Amino acid sequence: MKNAQKNVPSILLIIVLIGFPQISESIFTPVLPALRTHLHVSAQTAN
Image (cartoon, rainbow, N blue to C red; front, side):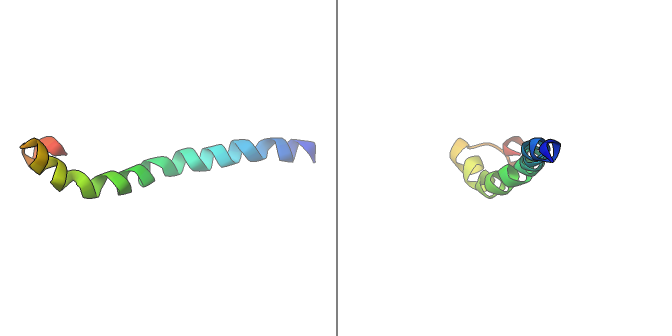
């Protein structure tokens, strides 16, 4: 039973690390058009 409790933080850490790229991309992607306009660069450069 003690080993199962020790593995829980590791599993939670794995879940967070797997989900982080999707969350950060969902936050960052909508700002790209504004970033492109503000910096006066092409869409390809902003991406």
